[in-house]
Amino acid sequence: MKSHIESLLEQTLESFKQQGIVPADFQARIQVDRTKDKSHGDLATNLAMMLTKIAKKNPRELAQLIIDNLPASSHVAKVEIAGLRFY
Image 1 (cartoon, rainbow, N blue to C red):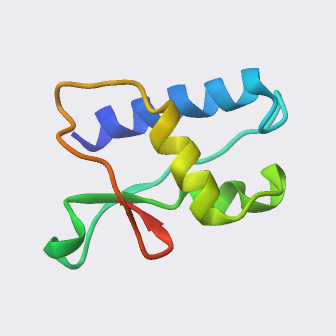
Image 2 (cartoon, helix red, strand yellow):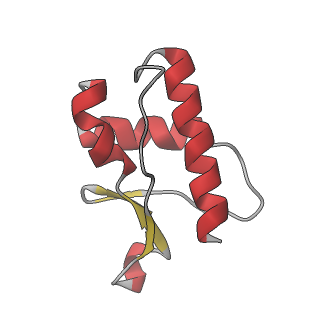
C-alpha cells in the first residue's frame, strides 16, 4: 500500500511540475510512513513540508493542493490534512 501511495504522490508531483508549482527539474524523495497514532490515519507523508520552500507556499496550502491533485484510487478511502502533516 505504501508503494501505491508513493506512486500517487509521484503523479501529483508531476502534475505540479506541469502546472509550474514546482520547477520541472525538481526531484523529491517522497516518503510515506505509518502514523504513530492510529487516530491520525494509516499513512502520512512529508511532501507538503518538502515543497514549502521550492513552491513558496505554506504547508497547509500545499497539502490542500496535494489532495486536490492526487489521482483517484479505489485503494484510498479518505485523504485529510492533520496538523502540519498530510494524512
